[in-house]
Image (cartoon, rainbow, N blue to C red; front, side, top):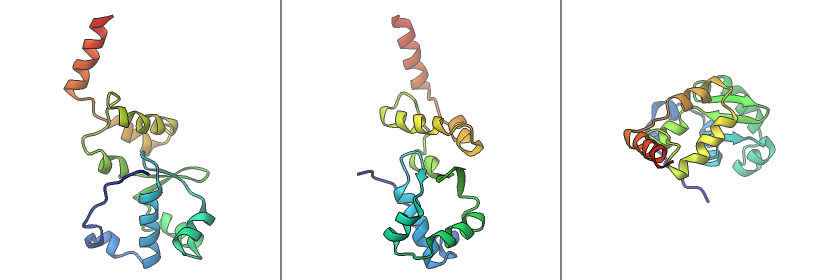
Length: 141
């Protein structure tokens, strides 16, 4: 079972407070059901069943062009990307030398042809320690 950081001030956030009850539930569904890279393969029927929102499809369709516009990107088919997820979950950036983050980088690379995903990859940090480790590895050969 994946664990997530969630902002304890979520309900105090003015953006979130302005959402309808269904939009709030959909947002919570997204942040708790996306993968470790912030990508969700949305099955609308299953999401409607799990959230109890009968008109999930209609609400999400309207909201993705409205209140979610700056927060979710449509990648392809049923795949959506939560734009701020990676920077929130990994505030120091991603490092290819951090084993838990390798799968995140790999997943983002699968969708690297999309501008919002490419931006996250480009903003990944390679710390001085990471560079030193790379140099040490090169010297061993």
